Image 1: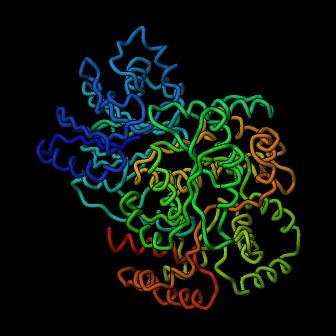
Image 2: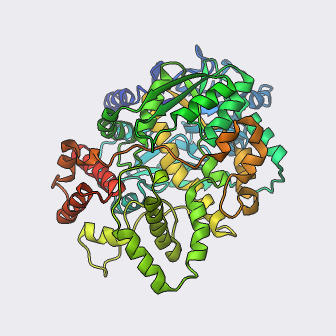
Length: 603
């Protein structure tokens, strides 16, 4: 796991480009503390920071082929690189034993068709010095980020926004569409950022760029392209194979273990292959705590378990982490415990397995159950629904986790009903559109336009929610959070549920395979029931979050929320803070706003 930056300019002097690249690489040092490299060739500059996982003493980057025509900078892991190498060795003389040269050889010899053969997570830039043309690509679910910017004649790209900004010689402006989408959902849609001049390569896509011709982009993978025939026996085998591939490393591999279904399955399969260390974060607030379940699963699978309690002081660090790693607002507060979990794991291992992806692929979120209820709810008369919605919103709340509050579940249900009725992307929302009009001080006649989401059409409402989550919420929130938290601790995180074969089987399965009327993960349970203790299957869905309600009333948070260097309706913000202080929980709205204002203040 690594980080890289790339630049191309015929107008900028080499000395200036090298100086900027040195600054950019310094900002990426946590992504790759083991080695740094920089190469300049005829207006193109390549920088790389390495976290050594495979072929530790070789496979240095930037990597150039023998002819000097192609240069590669690459971030990620190609899990099937050994098999791919076998198909290339007759036409390529390999000098290293890692996956980087396999990627270079495959792209040079086979072109874009090689992308479809790769199983792994990646972002890369491949420069063709003869044609002065750049190829960029990201893995199927975008686990590894890749940002870019151009003024037409120059091109700049990097693994992280702050490192990219260190290269760009022109000014940047805020993207208003991204702000609308961010406040609603907590993250930017795929392909967009908070800067109008900076884009992002989309997951499962490649992009070509050359001076004059500009960009061309195309998807190389669609999970619905090829019919998958599966059974519960097949799914278990697919997961066994996926975990096995992700245990390949020249360093020790551990696993995150919350005690929930997803992480327990992955940890259990890994423990069947080798002795592993597992890691979890507990909470002193019992409505948030899962530590006892993690400890029980660890004892059952025989892992060496390491756990810590969440430290309240970590909330104050998350703003610095967000600006340092993400470089733009990000509203998922679970970044805080994720950061602490990664710091814990990195003291013992350089690689950790995660259960991310199972909720989206196997129908695990409670909002899918909520969608079933909504289908019933919308059969009630409109007047009845309006009365229910008004009553639910008027009731006071506490700051406990929603899993321990029927009222919070009811309020989430009502918020979800608005999206469902309008036919938009149904996902957890921080701000309703009506609230955004107040926040921006706009009248109802003004049209608020956000950036576009990937709106995949599916034959069933709930399947459509799952599929949209897989290519929106999971990609731009869950995986982005894990990448930021793990890379800040120089830890590589691998997600077996996101293996392409597992994902294709899950995404193509009918809804009846995934869930009964009110319960999801039906296929996962029938396939993997014996892999974990029985109590794991009986537990309610919990999630991974922190109690920030009271912290938002601290002087540190209030100072930012009362910051006046913006065009928002401060009176409306003050009103939310007052209601929040009296017990009406506005944690999600205020946290999203806090992170945005912090970015505005410090960018």
